[in-house]
Image (cartoon, rainbow, N blue to C red; front, side, top):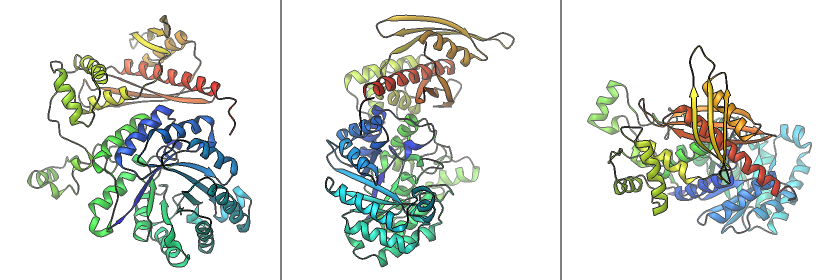
Length: 513
């Protein structure tokens, strides 16, 4: 059974989703989880995009050990140099160079003819070979490129030392038979193609990314590229969890497998959703809340008699477990630690003590704390933000015939206490106006969303906000059984992240790539 290599681009293509902006600590946190998931290759970012992205790629490169770390590069020497700098310290570095090849890109974007495109890519590959032993080359928009030119570009990449050649459906235009046919053509018509791995990278504009990727595998693709939860620009990328479970569930059909630890899928999905702020739809394949839920009476009857009547895979296979311990306000530290271990978290004593204090505070507000509540608390605690401002108290007055008013008490670093009061056209607006007055930060609220972490009237709510200041965006999250408190915490969290970025950019303003 042949192995399909997994190239994860959650930290690069995934972060290009509108509204997503991960800081370095969040990228490293996701990278560690992707390493636990068992991805073979990890595209950590686009170093030439900004000094911040270069630094984040370097942090990831130094943090993970058992995975190839990749930096994206245009076919330019400056970009290649940026990747070199970003991957210093990586155990297994690789550069990913791309250049558009389709007629529409050649004419309107590059303003190059075929010969110029070929020469530009060739020059970039020759320069990269001086510094990298592993090189991936991508034919951007290969899906709309002439077959003979695809063959010519792949042949050139092989001669110039590429170890992987990616044939992407960059705009999600093709159907499975068309996309699979390209791989079949390349396999049959390009000399020495067996010396490299062919990779499939699909976008989901027409909802066919997973189907197209599986068609590529059937026609000889050795590697697939995608993201967790299928996030990415426009309609997103191929969802890695869908490919992994399709190969595992239909192994006899595809006769291919991956090295992924499938039981880490659910936790990886939750972490990416939480840190990106992109909620997983309930009907999302594999990781959606309804993926293993059954409401129909006929389905429930079948499930009670034999689970395989309506479940082609088990929730346990992706790391979901039924609750074994019910935790509440009377639960002790030992039971709490055991529950964390059961959920896959082995924390040190200090982390357990901090998490236990948070748990006790939540347990005083809820009769029963669910696994989802615990996961939200733990995952929030594991990703720290430098706290310039810390919310201490909020007080809100509201009536449907009166103007909402909020009063906040915020502690600034060095223990400076800030107390302000403000009105608004709603309770949340009043809270945010009061925070603005207290912190003296001028920001724009670009996005605000609420979701329930668990069920019931006392459910733990999570608020996600995106703030912008002088063209720089940051997202913040807040958890509480009270939505107004969660809203305030999310806003302050985003403010702290904005300030952290401001300081980072100020320190690096003289960095040149």
